[in-house]
Image 1 (cartoon, rainbow, N blue to C red):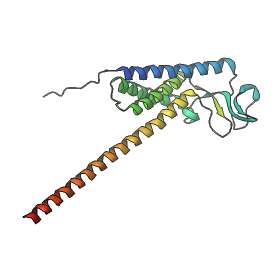
Image 2 (image 1 turned 60 degrees about the horizontal axis):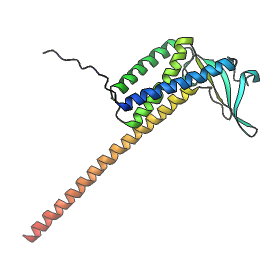
Image 3 (image 1 turned 120 degrees about the vertical axis):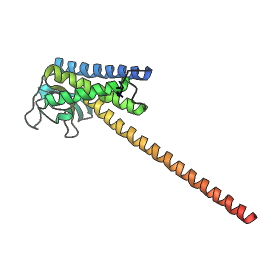
Image 4 (image 1 turned 90 degrees about the vertical axis):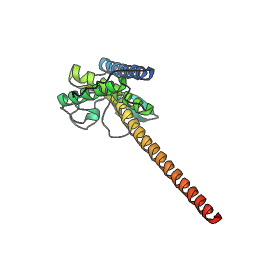
Length: 208
């Protein structure tokens, strides 16, 4: 008897189409902001952790005299926030496989939970945004620098992906809590039923 192979067939509803539309919007935001930075701010490839030259830095947000966010144009040949520097082929391969799987999961309506779908939407949008850079240029354009802390320079695609990862963790934890509470409610209900039944049996025995 020959086994039949089951293929995942896309069957998107308005939720899945909305997810794809949001992904497209996130990619557009990411690519447009990178284009603006490339057109208007010189690139600075830093070789140390020293303060960067002011001619390639643009203050973006200040609170009084305190500078909070600065635009600093750099090229990142690693993953988000500069990790895995120089692993372009590996990053492109892993990212592509994950993104294709995620998009198939969206179109095939495998992701049922709304929060989880929103999380995957953010991650895919950010992942594609940086993947476009890696494939077309061999590096990722980063430009958002937080001046109030020592942290890697990043971009909007990183923000979307990290926000999606955080939302995914929340969705998974929330689902586990819901399942636990449902099981606990069933256990309490069974305990109450057992108690009521035992009381009824005891009264019946006393009456007889």
